[in-house]
Amino acid sequence: MSRLFTVGIMVITMAGLAVTPAWQEVAQVHAAQTQRPTHMNCATGYFGCTEVADSEEVFGAGKYVGHDEPSLLFYSRQPGSGNHMKYTLTLPQDPAPFPVGGGKAFNFQLHPAFWFGMALCDTQSYPEQLTTCTPNSDTNIVDPVISPAHPGTAFMELQFYPPGWVPFQQAGGLSCDPAKWCAALTIDSLSENPVTGVLNNAACLTTVGVEPVNFAFITRNGVAQAPANPVQATLATFTPNAVQDLFMRSGDTVIVTMADTWHGLKVDLQDVTSGQRGSMTASAANGFGQVKFDPTGITCQNLPYDFHPMYSTSSEQTRVPWAAHSYNIAFADEIGHFDYCHGSAPILPGGNCPAANTEGFAATQSASDIDDTFCSSAASSFLVPIAGCVGQNDGFDGVPYQPVWPDGNQTLHPTPIRFSSPLTGKQDGVNYDRVAFEADLPRIETNTCDRTTGAGCTLIPTSDKGRPAAFYPFFSTGKKSGKSSMSGMGCQWALGNHLPKSLSDFGQNAQYGTLLSLAYTAFGGGGVSTTRYNDFRQILSLNPCKA
Image 1 (cartoon, one colour):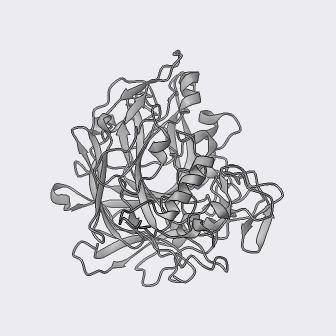
Image 2 (cartoon, helix red, strand yellow; image 1 turned 120 degrees about the vertical axis):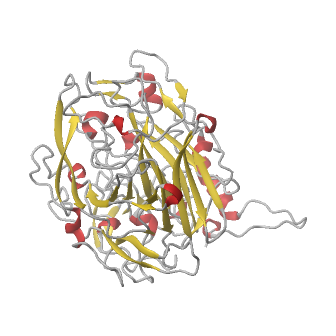
Image 3 (cartoon, rainbow, N blue to C red; image 1 turned 180 degrees about the vertical axis):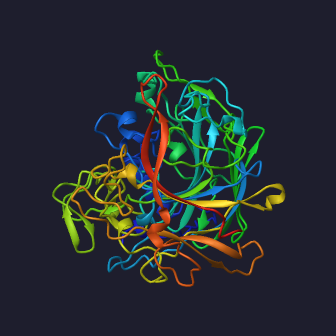
C-alpha cells in the first residue's frame, strides 16, 4: 500500500511538534501536479453548478451541461420562511474501504455533493432588467408571463462533500479528507440578459464564465480562507484547510441554520456529535462579490457585495427565474455523475476516460462514452482506490443509476443522508406547511425528451441507447432516534432504496409526480415568455414529516 492510502495519522517529531499528516502531504503533491482552475467553469459540466433552464442557450448551441438533482421542496406562508430556517442533518456513513468491488458503493460515487438551497438577490445577475432588489421580500415575485422585470437573482447552495476519493483541489476532485466531510457556501449567478440576448463581455466569459460562482468553505472562525468571489478567487479558495475549515465525521449529527444578517446570509453548522462549529457569511468582508454585468466592457470587474435572501416566504412563486428547478427553499442530492474508467490506458487527471478503457458498473461495461469527463486514476484517491469520472452521466449507466443506494445493507452500501424538515419562525419553532418532490429529469434527458411538448420525457431516465436506467433513488420518511436531545429525534427524510423501518416511500419513483410546465423569458425575444418542461413535480397538501 502506498502512502496515498495512509489515513489521517498525525506524525509527531522527536521534539513533540505536530507536522502535516502523511495523507495531506500526498494530497498537496497531487494537487500541485493537477490543480483545478481558480474558478468553477460551469461550461465544462462541473458538478457544483446550478442547473440552468436552457443549457444550449447559455453555453452554446448543441452543448448540454447538466445535473441530475432529485429534490425535496419546502413551502410556508410564514414570514421569514424564505430566509431563516434550521435543519437537523445526519451525515451518511460508508462501508469499509477495503476490499472494493463486489457490488460495493461509496458516497462519493452516489453523489459528489448534496445541498440545501435558497434564492438570493444579485442585481448583476439574470434577468438584468432592474438595478435594485429588496431583500427578504415577496415583492420580488414576478411571473415571466406578465413581465421580464424580475429582480436579479442568484442561487445559494450549502454543499456537503463526501470523503475518501480524489482531493478537492485536484482537477476532478471532490473530497476534502480520507474520512471526513466538509462543506462550502456557493452562490451561482447568470450573466445574461434574456430580453436582448446579450451575455457579459469576453473578458468575463473567459475569466469566470457565463455562470460565475462565489465559493467559500465553511470555517471554524467564520472567516473565508481566501477570496470567495469568482474574479479574485485563487487556488487557496478551493484548497481545503484542515486547520481552519470545519471537518465532520460520517455519522455525525449537524444542526444546520441559515439566516440573514446585516452583512448577508449566514450559514452555521453545529456538529453536536463532535462539539465543533463552523460558519460562513456571504459578505463583502469575506470576499464575496458580484461580477459586474458590462457587455461592452473590456475587463472583468468584481463588485464587493453582501448577498441577502430574496424572498420572505417559500412557495411555487418564489423561483430563481433562470434555473431549471422551480424552487427556493429545498434539499437536493447531486447524483448522476460517477462512472468507472477501467483499463490499462493512463488517465490524465481531470481529463476524459481514454477510448481504450471501458466504463460501466460491475460486469456491464461498454466503450467509454463522451460523457466520461473529469476523470481520475485509482492512485489519485485519498483512500478508496477506484478510477472513475464525475462529469455528467448522459448515458444513465453510472453508479448512481444502479441499485446500490442505501437499503440497510451497510456491508456493501452507505447509510442514507437523513435530515429533518426545516423549522422557521421565532425560536425556530414553526414547521413548513407543505412539501413537494421534484426531479429535473426532462432537463437532462436530452436525447429522448422534447421539453417544449413533453413528449418522450420519462420518470426513469432513458439513455441515448434507448435503455432505461436500472434504478432511480426516491425519498422516504422514518424515525430518527438518539441519546442527545439535539440529535433530531422524530421524523426525518432519507434518500435511497427500500430502507428498513421506513414509514412511507410515497409511491417510490411515482413520488416525483407529473410533468411541470414553467414559464421563462425567451432568450433574445424582446421580453416575451416561453415555456419549458424541465421537471417532474408533485406537491403534497400537508407536510407529512414535521420536525
